[in-house]
Every structure is written in C-alpha cells, then in structure tokens.
Image (cartoon, rainbow, N blue to C red; front, side, top):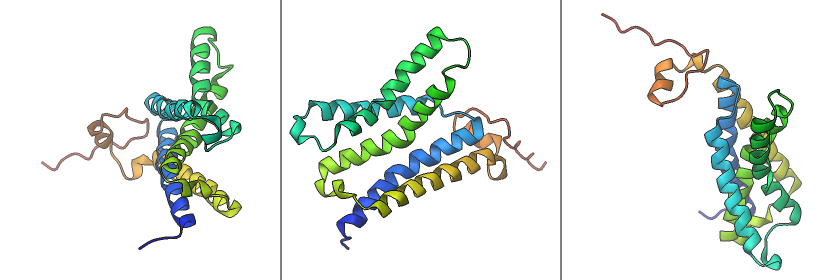
Length: 182
C-alpha cells in the first residue's frame, strides 16, 4: 500500500509532533512545568541536527537561515537558563526561559526530526500546502491540550502508585491507591 508523497509527509510530521506535544501538555497539566530531562534531551537532539546542517556545504542545506535560527532556540534557552540561575534571584526571565524551553521541545524537536527524515527521504521536504501546515498546527495544539487535560486530571484514571511505579514525582492531585480488600 503506497500512499501519495504528500500523505506520507503529513503522517511523518504528525507523528513527530504528537509525542512531544502530548508529553509536554501532560507534564504542564500535572506539575505546572516541563521537566528538565525533556528540555535537555530536546536541546541535545536539536543541536545535533543544527550542527550537522551547519557542517553541510551551504548549497546542500535543505533549510534557510531562518530555519537554522529556529533550531538555535534550545541553545538560547540553555544559555538563558544559566544566566537566569546565576544572575537573577527573582522571576524576571522565568517566562522567557520557560517559553524558550517549551518552544525547543514543542517546535524545534519535531522540526528537527522532520529535517532528518527529509534528509533521508528528500520527497518529505515538499510539505508546502498551507492547509497541511495549518492542520499540523491544529494537531499539535490538540495533542498539547489533550496532554494538559490528562495531566491536570490524572486523578481520574491514574493513582499515586502509577506515578511511583514509573519513578515519577507525585503530582499534587494524584489519587491515593485504593486499599486492598482484607
């Protein structure tokens, strides 16, 4: 079963977006923050793609300078996080640091995965339809909102034991485990 290239492109981009958006939404909903491990992983993967693209001859790069700048967001986040931690005791930069960390995870990570897929299969670089792009933004927002609702209302379908078994921090609203029948 061979799908048209534009359908394959859309499917790859949707899958690359679904996990980070849902995971980020869940963590923000359950904890009010995106965990540092996720942001560091996004920084490492996106920066590896950025460096790999910068090492290519300019005429062979599949992206523009604006796209390279976008891939630099996670590094800007990391630098600002260092500055924020070292120089500011208040919350002056916190929204900027939070926003860059979230952008690095929700935008730059899926985009870098898409770029790697496009390098491996050049026909994937042809996602040019405005409708397809808007649909991807809509899908990303859907998964972010769904993840947020799942995280915020984790008490409806998870217990504190589920978080403990996963080695996760207990959110403030996790539901206590039902007592076993004696």
